[in-house]
Length: 273
Image (cartoon, rainbow, N blue to C red; front, side):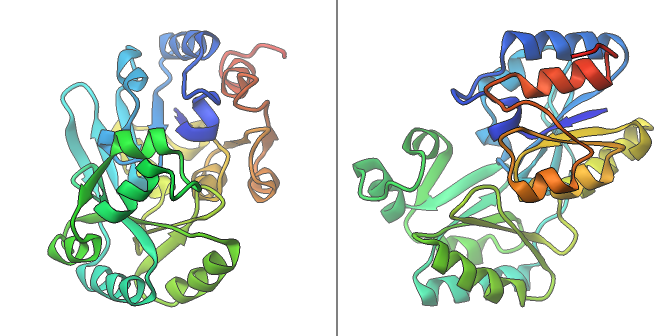
């Protein structure tokens, strides 16, 4: 199995899966290798090009909170945040005035005020095209979290500064029964007590009869760390965080240099690069 993060990894800087990557995927699939998406995105935020590549059977989404079979969109595994923890997180963030998003049932939701501020350009720390095309605005995101507290896959927090991130990372890390990670600079992502890409992949691998010794995982951010450490071959992108590179077995090219394709060619197809 090859497990691939999307943003900063399998997707190039323009959000595309390149021709070289697609060819590497198909050649690996012909050898009986499962190519699996493993992303922090909610299921309905996956780019269309993931579905257009024949042979990609499964997607691990929301940092491992859901595993879905793509051909019929059947949910085969779920690992949500405990309801009591969702309520506690909502109370803390609302009191502090921190911006947050909630993922539930494969969709990402955002407060309408933040959505409009990103749309108008008032908030410039987010990719506006991505946010406006993947987020569903609601009147009150914290009321929404409480209302759906039994079904929250992930809570994504977006900070205005590194100082705010450092402060709330400590506060959130003290909440029992949650995991706290990050996928980009001014961000934290909160999952359930055992939620990670490694956890979601483990359940899928058991279903398919794949062992950790048969897994290669590629990523660029701390939320990829668990699956990179679990894999027999953990691959960090050339554009990865330094901490991710340190835990990896191999550092490939950047996502602008077909780094994923190069890793598949080297470790799966047995080609020298």
